Length: 264
Image (cartoon, rainbow, N blue to C red):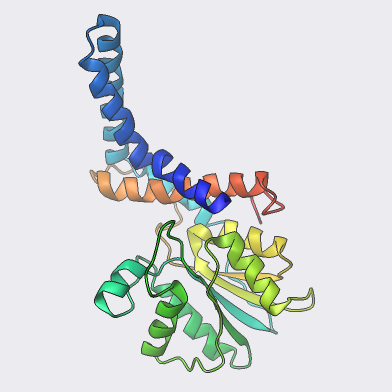
């Protein structure tokens, strides 16, 4: 149920969608017969235009993403029991349509996973990811795309452990824990995008995993800057990603899916 509610919530309250909905409301208000409603619509429209201009000029998304991406440094233990590749970046819609594995933005998750697999040849290799779509009757899941991609880049997947029923990060951690039964004595490397790592670490620790983050797929340089650059689409995409993660961190803590609001 929480998965369904989260999808419905985000459809309306993601920054880009919410801006469109508020702008639509402002447009209706400006056409009202009541003069007071008209003035409210005009003020709302003007303020939204200023907000969009500010987001277009300044790297607001970067400012919010940097704390997420800088939260963990990549450290490796001497002994590794397994390497976990977190799904979510696989484009199931296009992959099904085109008949080949297609990623959204972070195919370097896979490159890091393969690199670590060669570095720790005795470690158990794991992929977790089912489908993040609310309504989907596609014949393939994220795990199917992962198998295709890993095969294409030359990884021997005969011993790959696959979990393909999870819908979100919390289920990634819990369903995989039910499958592999991690113990406090075991060390697991967790591979995912840097901006997603805080929430992922929080979920996996809550589920009983001892994880060592291996962040990849960075979207920022890690340094805060304010150089103007007119790029509304790029800045809005980054802002959407950042807000989604912060909302996820708060929601997961309130629902008891993580023990820390800001995992470290």
